[in-house]
Image (cartoon, rainbow, N blue to C red; front, side, top):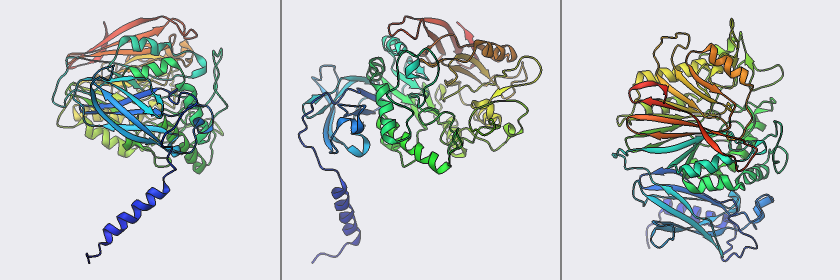
Length: 515
């Protein structure tokens, strides 16, 4: 008789348990309505692969998305051409009810710097077609990279005309810097409505994502190119910081809510399998390389953040603060100690890219909101964490990171800033340039506030919240060129868009200049 193998026995036992735990299989589904109404998406391109996403949901605003609690086989195809005459890769996966019948596929069988088209099949239904381009080979230096970055798309406050213009720009990559959904209803002069009240449960967060993803312009932008994403606060709750809630909820309750929100995010975005959430934890920060031209450091400024200093009485979250000793706390962090160390390692790597691009959620430069004597800071930005900002900027300096540019969002306004370790010194050295995109739709703070900050800070090159839109970037080895793209009227789905201004950072010369 063969020798008893305890390890093999346990493997078989676990495998049998896993199979028995799977939901029943719907082998030949027939759908009464299109199950692909939420579209398709691609994300996180590598030289040989991509992460693909879709979700089966014939009734996406209903519990369960209108699906029975059965696993559904889904076939996927990646082709060299839009007609799918020549397949590059194909396979079979399963959409499971525990994950809202979302589908996450990853492949590593593609060629670098190539355009590909993809689609999904389930039963008698076929998804829309999406397109993406793989990243260049690790040792390649592409002539250029065209990408856009966006932030803050409150559904009720406007239409997604910005995405229609982004699609027309034909970028290789779209970078989303957070507030993809809004959990809350606020603002004035709404043009449309959320599907329900503020979400707190998994099904409610699923419905909120579905509400946003039913927008055709947003779907078209997902289908047009690969995305990379980070999140800000509204994907969970306004102003949350780690397990601290704006309403001072019990941290255990806050973490439970965060787990629901993180799972719904994973179920609706083209995230890598390595980003699968484990309860209230989801490793979102990552790096995406474009050959030797650029490295995107995608940062998470919410999950590990210290609570905001000096909040309003009886509240958590943001505040306009002055004379706040807690603001100077050295241990306070936006990224958490482990992510700070991870970022430092990526900036100091041996294979240095020509450009280091930090994709994070909010404005990093100092902004004093009080004219004249005294200082007034917004605590939910990096101004609430000056020691953490100082550590990051000193890391840029000490690692000699080549051509760092910080990308930000959150504040619903265009900002172009010089980043320094000492903002009080007008003649101090500039370590990096910062470009903050205005919102896709979300309403801005008063323009007088931004103009005050601009007048108080000589490092502020431009600040205005008069426009909704996005930033379009053309990157080469020798220059970073950013067009600030402004919509005429966010209340119109067919709004025109124009370039408000263009700014350039030359290689080896930190500091943006008007073109």
